Length: 174
Image 1 (cartoon, rainbow, N blue to C red):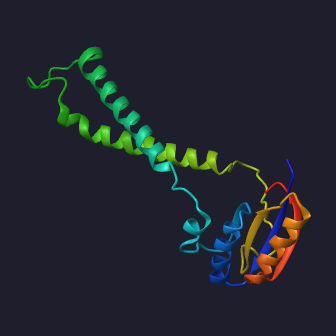
Image 2: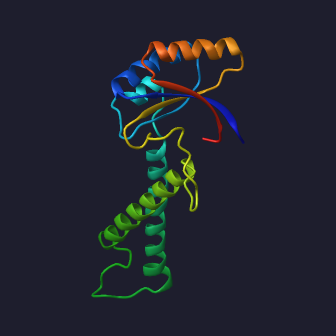
Image 3: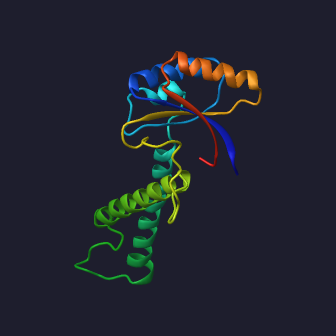
């Protein structure tokens, strides 16, 4: 689905960071910000919520722990009990290494899978960069294009007032 965007480019990350708050204050919808490296404080300036990936890691890690305990109890006590020196079959201390390993394995794999799904990263996906050089030395602030032409002019004036070097209108599926 193609959408219309306003793409403003900046040369300095501090100028970009200073432009985000006024744009949000004027109720323009920020689609995304592109930068060649992370910018400290940009998430707070954009009003992004914290990620829920740690919750996915915790839930699936607990599932891995439960699976490890149930599987080991089933194999050692119910399916194939062995009498080794009179020790009990359901020795909790013997279960700890496998429980730890499966918790970490399930949690790590689920985190990677959730990240790929959430970011829509899949094989053969084409890059969708808003402008040239955004991964090298430029910074881009991408706004959803307002419906009214008056709002488009107001957005352009606001971005130029806050240091944008170039503003383009693009139709893309970013």
